[in-house]
Length: 337
Image (cartoon, rainbow, N blue to C red; front, side, top):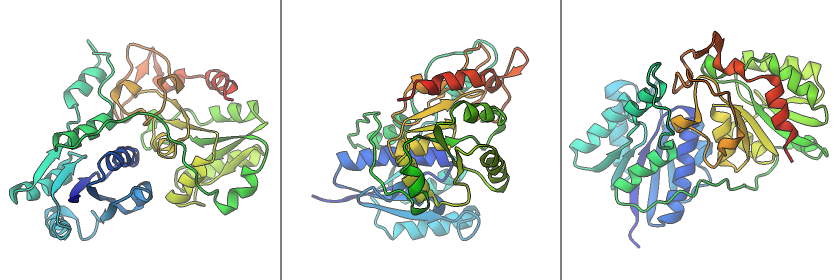
């Protein structure tokens, strides 16, 4: 069987890159003749480590791959891999410049359709077209279909068996329900009021909560929670992306905003209960294999106002995500088995 080498580009953001990994896993399983060359930021390489016949190539956009000259350099580096097809799953300025180089050289390529107009219709203030859009993972899959590959996504979670990081082995042996929690997000209108989590921790002293994601400031917040609540455990600053995935795979459930925590849970087959405010699952960014029934949100005609969570969504004078009460989250968690 002749091998076909496909170059795939998706540089950011973390959740989007994780969704690409879910699609590539199915693409490779259904097309054994494909060899994949994945180009993304170096710290996302852990998402792709278990995909057969995949080579990960890091892009260094702040160093040798900076600007058009840097992308020209990256183009020549990638040409050495004897590529047959180019799949641009990003469709931003940087990826379009790189794709143009390949197009000019005669390579066959396909570019992601982001559905920008449909997303504008979904988030506009007046005459909002409130309909579910094509899932992002299907948009990714469409790129490969347009290149002639057969690909059918099954949209189910596949639980992975991964080792427990040694420093959390004792925690995982406790006879408790283990709930991962990714309470932070890049954009403010995706973040549920942090003080609300105090109510959740107090409501379930019999469960263990494991906090993921963030930098120094988030680590300080999570550490303060740990000081108050014996059932809170903090991973921030203690794990690599690889070991985060390992630990998430051993949890019973993940709790997350509309953020990368949800997509990391999908990668390892862990159910995720997610909280939504300015954004909405209809935009196509629900975690791969996750259920719409596990989305906690309040219906309001102003929602959604944003695709990425970078725009306010006031609903009767209240930020949309603040309409989600601690009671709503607590009641949902009571039903976890």
